[in-house]
Length: 284
View 1 (tube, rainbow, N blue to C red):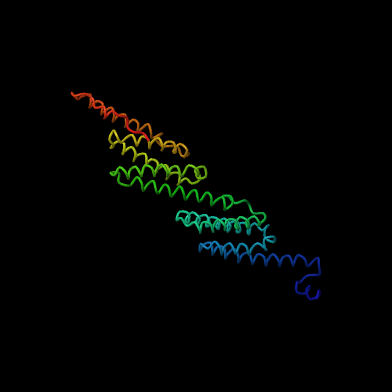
View 2 (cartoon, rainbow, N blue to C red):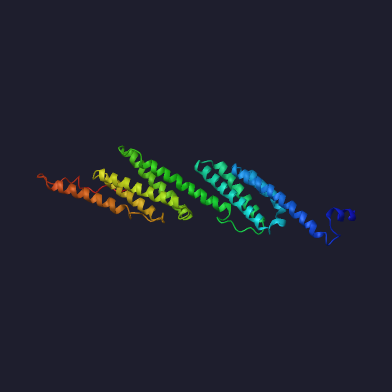
């Protein structure tokens, strides 16, 4: 048997035959690796995280033979990073859509994914951290985007109905409050999101400025209260810094101008002052 094996291997008996065996093992491992990576790339392109993951699992037994091959390492790193990006994108999408069940399944997938990646000895740490951490950031990002969409919708509503306007003002305060506990996660992470946030804040402030300019002396007090509530939250949502400083002083100035105009009008009357008109606008 030994003679036949030596003949097949084309080498003298061990140890000269050992390099031939090792070469055959590496070649077989490389073939399996190439097939697995090609399949994983195909499944990632088709947005099939589960199937891509299974192909990476199939690659694990061959890793000891391939971990020193720089070309293979780069391909494996690329496959893991693409799969992580896809999973995070899927998670953000389902979080925005309110699909809690699917989001939970992706979290379970993240636990398996992170565990598998650790088993590939020698791979550099993932640039964005473990997938579970990326999902936390992704969920926070989805929350910010959802609240910004809500804010834009609220300030686009008609303002002629006082009760509906009050609901909008209350909803806007709550939307900004929802961002406070997650802001440290997202601040500075995505430039486009920060730009959108700044633009939305500018739009909200301009909307309130316009409401204050058009409101009566009696109604401007509620806008002043809103401005205080807004500023309290906006200072916590930094960076980015507010483009025009605090909102409350601007609304307070408009309120003061309105009261001054009212006082001047009353003083110009011959029948004296109207104490009702000088009552302080209700606050809270």
